[in-house]
Image (cartoon, rainbow, N blue to C red; front, side, top):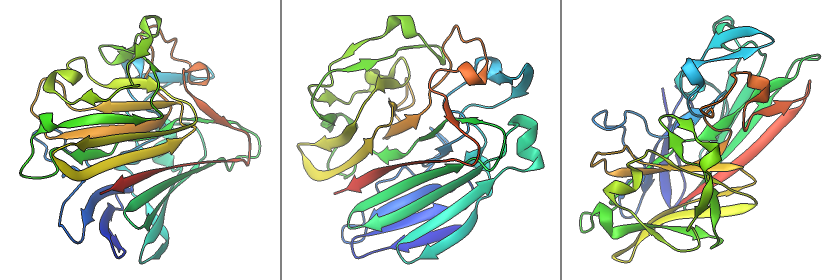
Length: 292
């Protein structure tokens, strides 16, 4: 099922499967900003990553000595969400624990995703609730929106660059295969713009540790059209395009969680970046996508 939202500036499509953004379109120019899930490169638009972000070693983890299978980025992106509230410019969708989720994730939870439109901005709000009266909830959550690059017929991929606010160096964590090589952390030159090129993603995603408010923008000097992702107090962000391809899109991904390190012991409660919620407590976070 698809959901249509709009205001005076943009129209947005959301899928109930995965509560996934599927379109962000400027009503005046007709520009589609969101990647349209061409399976030649990547068959998704903007999946919600929950209850893990990234890949786990051997696609599994342990809780209290018991092992559970879990695919990369978790199961929410393929879950059937229910609409709990909707008007012309906002919608809230919900996914809860089931017998099926308990086979791979032994926790009670409620996950709510709200989308709100204001001007040229789409705000995504995450709410994770722990309904248990006795047990802590361990989870990660993150975003994976892909943006069409180039945005216009007159430009090409290499005309665009990444711009960062604030302009400062940030710690970057390289990957060893699908896993983090934390001993090889280094400082990235995010105090200046980074030109987009096909070789930028040869080693897969660029992963940064972040603090406070950040704005990552994809723009070009050859067009006024751009896309920005603004997020506050997310500990990590990934920037990704499929390596060694000519894929015409780039993802900017704020995360509360991250892939396993190559030396991870597999214990979910000790996992790098894991979030925890006390019984009956609630976690909230949001980020903005602004198009121009």
